[in-house]
Amino acid sequence: MSGRRGVVLALGFMVAAVGAFVVLDRFGGTDRFADLPGDADVRLRGRFTPAQVTALAGLPQAAAAECVTTLYGVTVYGAAEVLREAAVITAVQSPALRRTTVRQGQYPAGDAQVLVDAQTAQRLGVPVGRRLSLQRDGHSVNATVVGVADRPGDLTNGASAAVLALPAGAVSRLDGGAPCDEVAVQLRRRSEATAFQKAARGVLGRDPGVTYDESLRGHV
Image 1 (cartoon, rainbow, N blue to C red):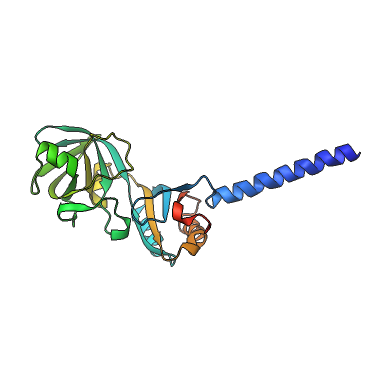
Image 2 (cartoon, rainbow, N blue to C red; image 1 turned 90 degrees about the vertical axis):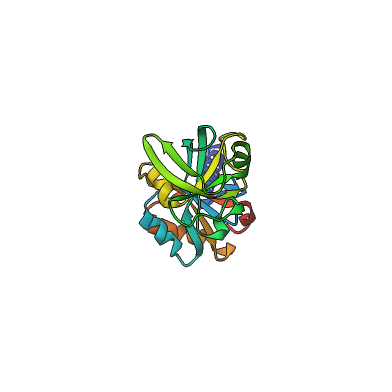
């Protein structure tokens, strides 16, 4: 009997441990940390409507929240040669959430304006003022180059591929109107990370995928 009781107790401890891990993972376990771009504290993954992104930005724990969709496989016309397999990042409006720094010109202020990474601009002689046509899966956006910027270091399209930045509205059109798939959030206080995720669940009606910035270890 004592041996059977020991097995039952051991199984009970295992179940409790698994349950604790599930709760920890749901609210940002140890495998949910990364060095997020800019001053972003939290990254949510899923499918988000514009109204949901606005609601997330309005939560009391959020200093800023914006869609940060990245598109790959974009073809760009208008440079000295056709740019294939380019990446397009979202040119967010909140300075704290920006993934790149402008080195020449200005940051996009409207959907018809675009940034080009400095490496591509120099290699192909793409000046500020050049008109480009971006195409992907049958959808297109025309935009004027208003600035040259640093290349973000967190992309997966190869070191030599072009990187451009468009405002969220233009990114959505280039993606065929698909919902935003990633939201970056800057918190007002790091101690509110878990409270923010619970509030986000209330806005979205579900638990989104969550990644916390490395700086939040010990706060969630």
